[in-house]
Image 1: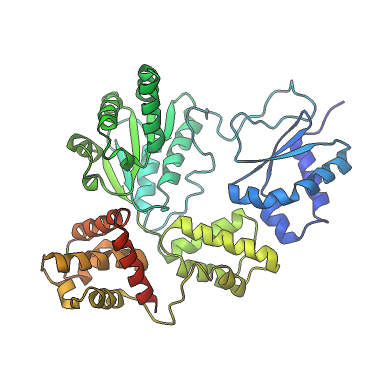
Image 2: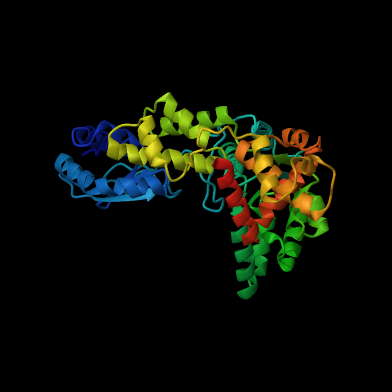
Length: 449
């Protein structure tokens, strides 16, 4: 007897579930799920993220009963996040069958790549266009040193990790024999510590120095770790001299890694260094529309505009706001501007109708620190002026998404590198200085009111 494929079973089950679950819930939670296997009494379904898994688990009993009623098989329903590389779409009841190829035929567990991150799923805008082009160039022609190393830097949640995974997935899909390794820097450091503790240093060195492409995320975590910097210096040299590709992400440019050895800073900067800036309004809307399409929901244009206008700092917060609205809409039964406003009332601070621009920020900052706007624009270098000036530049960058040259023009025609240094300095300082962090939050409230 020939058994139906797991996808065929799932399609039949979805057809039956349509009569039990509302259309918006079907589109939001059920249809995006992917059937992975139906073997040994377990029906395994994949969901794209933890947020999805949290909400879809409420439907597990209903899915279980539907499968039992339709096929007279008492399956245990298992929900997992993502598709493990060991999972294959197998015909039911035939464990000896030949597995079907996965979407990325060359991917292996060693690479640690997320198959959901691809160039196709990355939304390109003015703030990341150059970074996207540079990553595509590295992926298409990994041999050579024109862009080696590639150093991507920018604030949190702007798409650096997405692009890094996209490079690896692109290379693996076309050259399955390539040894591509993605690793978060913190994990790299922990592995190094474990290797020393367990006397497995040779294994550690072999793993990282024999790869064809090393993708290392958040390289700033090796700052202040002297022994780790020495190890990475030699790993970098080995790969670079062998013509192997190195791609790194960071929250700041190489020159701002003040706790890093000079020899590493110069090596990080010897290839291509690319800044990723916060997305502009049009890009934010495009990202939201892509998310809505992926979630199979219809969202009014005014809701897209509301979220994109009020969530401007980074993509991660933008997608988080969209997920929050989506969750509220399940309770409300529809997605409207009123639902979005209610869902985001604790996230979006009302501005009271006041238009916020660079002049408003300068005014509030100057009054907060008891200096004048003229002082902020002047060439004065005393501490009582430079510190407020740097805070004002930082707020213009983060609240208004102004470009570095635009900020420089407003602050006395300063060079964009001066603005970048000021913004990076404040960004780093607020992670260590609770007083400064409180001051900036207070200034933000004054700007909003």
